[in-house]
Image (cartoon, rainbow over all chains, first blue to last red; front, side, top):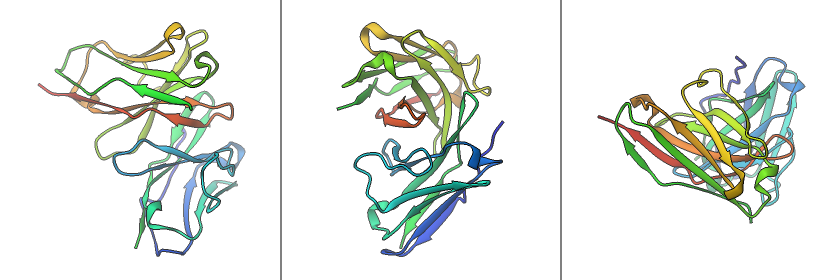
Length: 106
Length: 118
């Protein structure tokens, strides 16, 4: 099965830039989506097609994908960005999620 | 506004059967695949499988194939997740999500908590 690896946790100071990575074999050959999940809430799509933002998602959220690594970047991080973030890709007809990264804003 | 509304929390005993639902509104339900995602207590997201409501074509995660069944009734814009024999390890929150045209999961239900305990 296809595996996506994320760091368990990332910490960032308010106003700084946070980067969350997602690694997988030849990940750059497929499209990656990213989801934000705040405690007790449903996941929310924040990036799709590697770098596209859905309507309503702030420009502070951006994405990239090349080689074996996709990256979610959150600039000017705010307290409200504190959440779990999951990358996701497709392996043929099967969707795969990364293990998730807890972003702490402190 | 696109909405997916799921059925309420369930408490079941091991060996019992269960069906939970996910009703779509605000869009043409048959035109988008519906996916089911499991989140076990304190854990991450796990893709279970999906269904095309227009023809009920479905596929499953290899690790869950045979343990659950995904179905849909396009006449009432509803997808289902069914267990014939629950296990304690099925205790989790289950989310349905709409799969957009770029394969992303662009709208999510509120989640259904399933607790399986003797």
